Length: 99
Image (cartoon, rainbow, N blue to C red; front, side, top):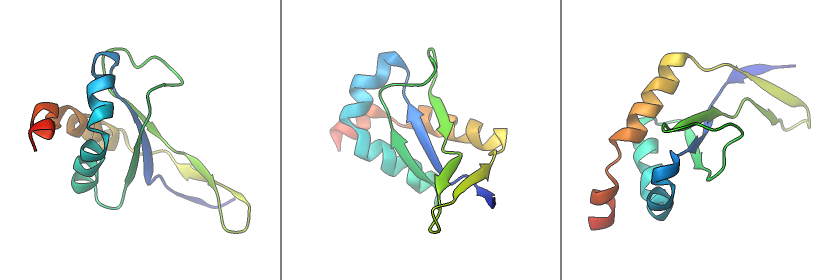
């Protein structure tokens, strides 16, 4: 089995921000892509665990490769998860609606 780096993350907003963030989802995703080129992001309304009052950042750790073999990714460094979470909080929903 081949290993590689995680390049995709699923973001689950805190419960109090889900509706507003969902409405501005494309701008939010663009914000994250600009901060983290080379990575892709998806927003989900539900989480496999309760993230509480913080953003849930879930790396996509495995995928099926071109030869139909499952590929397991290396665990991303904790600093990267923290930076993604900071970028999530830096997104200004009010400015997004004004644009």
